[in-house]
Amino acid sequence: MGNSTGSTVDDLQAVEMHLWYKKFMTECPSGQLTLHEFKQFFGLRGLDPKANAYIEQMFRTFDMNKDGYIDFMEYVAALSLVMRGKMEHKLRWYFKLYDVDGNGCIDRYELLNIIKAIRAINGSETQESSAEEFTNRVFERIDINGDGELSLDEFVAGARSDEEFMEVMMKSLDLTHIVAMIHNRRHSV
Ligand SMILES: [Ca+2]
Ligand SMILES: [Ca+2]
Ligand SMILES: [Ca+2]
Image (cartoon, rainbow, N blue to C red; front, side, top):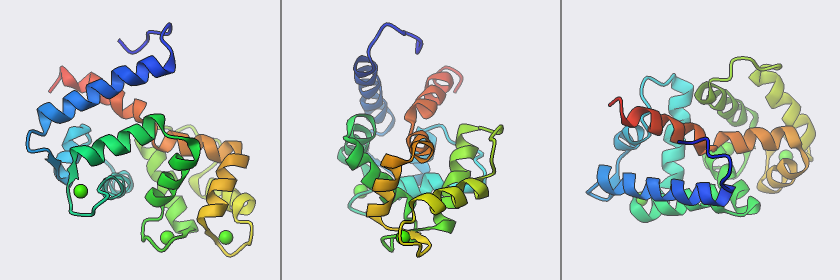
């Protein structure tokens, strides 16, 4: 199963990509996922409101042409970016995901909600600091001009120079958690 420690990361990713293609083709014959189907697709039910909002934001970010559906190409583009993209591209994508109101900046409230959602999704209860504390710490360090908002430049530079922030960033779109859920549920549904 998932614990083939001998394989390289790339091998694993190739296998996973194939699973994801297959899943899309079999579960979405129309070729277009609605938000509702998207949640079903990832086996996401009974999420708390914060996690739910995060998934909806993720859906909107995947839906690049904003027609309300994720088609196969959008799905593939997003997945390959998440799994294989260069750090710079990933960070830009995260930025878009986190900038919920789309005003080109991430404010404290947007970041806080995302941090809370990530924690809810990953089920990490035992955090040494609260989401609020974490958000404040991040802002202190990477909001270079101190205007209370993170610009794309501040965000990218900050993630690169701040290990703690980067780690959370990587966790936020770490699909392994979701992939594991799919693997586990495939037999039980
Ligand atoms: Ca679309
Ligand atoms: Ca914003
Ligand atoms: Ca700023």
